[in-house]
Image 1 (cartoon, rainbow, N blue to C red):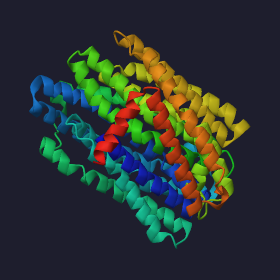
Image 2 (cartoon, one colour):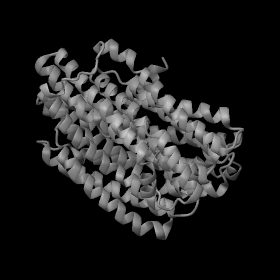
Image 3 (cartoon, rainbow, N blue to C red):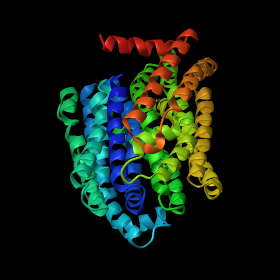
Length: 509
């Protein structure tokens, strides 16, 4: 619960950042340049943080502590810290120097002033990699001690500094705003690292970088696993690179439309899937260390059902009401109605991606715990080829909607591949038949909610944007639909919904 709450707060601050940027910069040249400039630092953040430094570190720390005690785990953590600092500095330096070639590669459609601005912003943003690497290291150590909240809320502080920069410079020109936001990313990176230090000291004591890297065979194994994690993360993020490259060839604003649609999906699924997945990894790692198959199976099944119970109604709402969702969030300032329509169309196509990505966030954790990263690499390579092929086919036909559909189809096939492989690795299977049955019941439970929501949504005046009336209509549709979903799920015997409602009632006293 703490992991999901922390992730949720962080994602809310991230959404506030996107709304602030959309209001001031709209969907034109400057915003497209910023999105592209943040591609590589953001990509590295994803595969270091979400994809897997914690996936390599948590099992290794758990094993070291089980075999030789806490001090052995602390020493291993100190050596990993030293390696991360060195690699982060090297990557940042290389990124700054190679920025012109990087932009040529990922944004071939950018020319003139747009190209020059993207290169300059990329050079400012690249050192962000150092901070996110160290935060991910702290997150792995804290997660092992069952502390989830601070590491998950920490990225939200980066978003908060960016929002502050927009508010301070909003009366300046777009160029001034985007430069202020870029420097705010670096300041926020330092802040979100600093707040992780007090809980880290509380749970582990002061951990200093250790230079004796070659003396520890565990460290060498962790480095090998981190190398595999980097490849796995790279495979996942090449999809992002490929689709943004294709977006740069489309109409002005396409990069921003696609970015905003994926950010909304990321907000919806990330609160639940990332939080549940982070909490799942330590439990799965302990089950593997203790050879406890029943705990492994129950932890995986329980996490999957909980994520499905919360995400399926959210996905249904987005699928049937994309325009109202985008309009109340983005239809203000420089964001036009055409921008809203294009973003909503892309968002609708991303609904399968949202559900499949949530499943992948959870299903990858057992692979990390089982140290079967070879399987993750194989599926990642397959996914990259499929995404690029589908994107090159669909983007010219459907524009930004084609990019979204390509990503959705590819991610669904990757999830299926992961499940088939994992079923063969776990004796006794994963209980997928029962899980599929429960998910089907969850889908059926959304039908009354969507019908009632549709009747209410018709009263909205969505082209006017985030008016009090529209917020009220969308809020009523969400509340009425949510109540209908909970009632129907209760009648169908979906225990996870009852469990979540019981927790909410307890929190409210």
